[in-house]
Image (cartoon, rainbow, N blue to C red; front, top):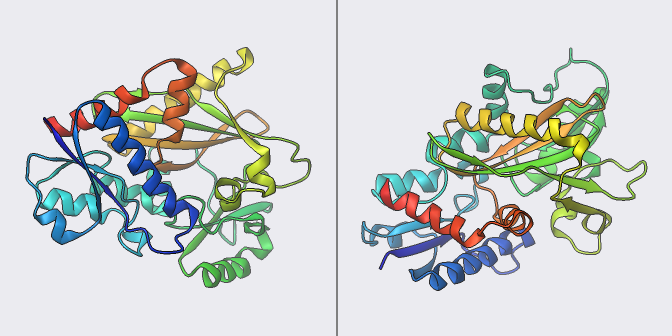
Length: 310
């Protein structure tokens, strides 16, 4: 019987919702794997505990950051590799490149992948979106992050002081938003059908998926943004384009495991890659499985089996 260790963050008292969600996903995957006949143990991240693990286990890595340091989220796969432990998900190199959004954007530009233009004093006028360089889960993102070109430098400093980490700014793409989930090996990637985030009754509000929109119940965004998993006939050419771009991202970043790409579509129907997340949650994968009639449980098992043979 294959033993699986589900590795997750330490969950402190009064943890924010995005951190609590890591434990929920760990328990969810534990239940799936137990039902599939695996021996499963949940383990909060600990170097000493990892050092004692048998080399034949598979570590299902759900740690989305080194303790207290989003900028160092790639360290956990690095530690697993140094201990010669098999693990699911993307590698140290994958996470190093994708966790730092500025670094990731440079690599996208080198591979001619469309992404919003970065802010500079010489860049064109218009709206810019300020984002943390290395935070995920939309941490630090709110409506005040959308600013005019002339305000960017001042607001950048204010945002960095507010959340205590480096930030950057890029051109705001006002339009539709899509997500593409994918998984596989470096040579063989499975691109799942893109789905759209619909901003219902937003009117003149900024169409941004903020932290509150993701995690805080009874806020406007939380209650008015919904996922649409089916495709309209008129969107078929766009859907094909997004699938091709997602595959190009997989190749450009030499990914292995599972990942998510977020897109914005401008008024001229041009797609822009907002970001590539090499350690995403599994909710998108689950809902796609429900919509498109494939087994989410088998997908989880395939990730374990893939890690076991590497």
